[in-house]
Image (cartoon, rainbow, N blue to C red; front, side, top):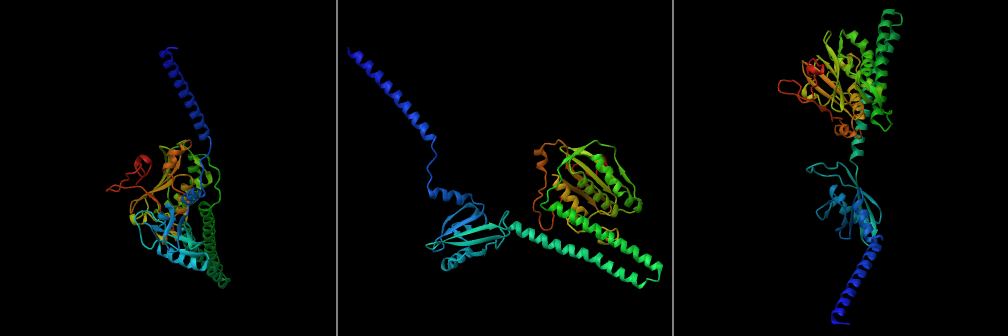
Length: 418
C-alpha cells in the first residue's frame, strides 16, 4: 500500500472514531437528562424555608442570624443582617428554658410603603443553642376583629333605640288604657318602631350574608329593565307618601350577569335614599346605559346633597348624612352599605356624585352579560376583607363648576337632572 493510501486510511479511521464518540456522548447526555438532579437535605431545607409564607429566621446561641428567608425581611423581623431585638431576647429565653414562646413583632414605627399592621412570632428551640423564629402576618385577623367590635357596638346602639321606645310606648298604652284616642296614638307609634326594628334586623342579616362566607346565589342573565321595574314597584308607596314622582328613561333591553333579588334590593335602597333626602315635589330619576363592559343604572335626585368631606363615609354601616331626617323616615343607616356590597359581589362598584343644595347621583355599575372576564376584572372591587371603616368608596371626580367629569354620571345624556 502506498503512503497516500495509509494517509487516506488514517483519516477515515479518525472520522469513524469521531463519529462514534459523538454518538456515545449524545447517548450519555440523554441518559443523564432523564435522571433527576441529586438534592441534598440541606438543599431541600433551603427551598422549604425560602418558599414559606411565614417569615423564618434561624439564630445561633449568640443571637446572630444563621438563616432567614425573604418573607422575614418583608415582615420586618430581619433588617439587614440583624434580627428584631424582641425576637433576639425571646430567643435567649427560649434557649435557656427550652420552651416555645410567642412574641409580638408588630412594627413599632411607620415604614415607607405597604407594611403589615400586626406580626406575631413563635420562637422554638432547635437544640445546641439554635432557635427558630416563625413569624406570621396577623393584620387581616386584627382588622376583622376591629370590624367585628365596631359592628357589635353599632348594632347594640341601633337596636337599643327602637327596643327602648317599644318598652316606653307599651307602658304608655297601659297607663292610658281607658283613653281610646291615646291608646290608638301610642299603638301607631309602637307599630312604627316595630316596623323599623324588623327592617333593621332584615338588613343586618342581608349585610352579614354579603360580607360573610355564605355562598352567593349563582349568577344568571338578568334583564335590567325588569330590575328597574320591580325596584320602582317597591318604592312606589314611599314616593307617593313623599309627593315625589320618579321619572325613568325608556326600555334599554340591557342584560347583566347577577342575582336578580340582590340587584333589585340594591336599586330599591338607592331609590329609598333619594326619596328620604329629597323635598316634596322634587324630581327623582332613574336612567340606564351601557358603558363598555359595564351597565350603569343611575339614580338622580335634587335633594340636600352631600358635602365633599362626607362623601367617602356614606357607604359606611350606620352612617347618616342627616341623622334626624333619616330616623324620621325610618332609615336604618344600612341601605347604602348593602348597595356597596351587592355591587362588589357582582364584580362592579357604586359611584357617587353630589353637591350640597343641588342633589346627588348614585350609579350602580354591574358587568354586562357576555362581557369579558378580564375587562370586568380590571375594575372589580375586592370582596374579601374590608377595612374597619369600609371607606373604599369610588368617587366620581367633579370639575370646578360642579359638573361631573367622569363617565357622564349626572350629565343630561345619562338621564341625570343635576
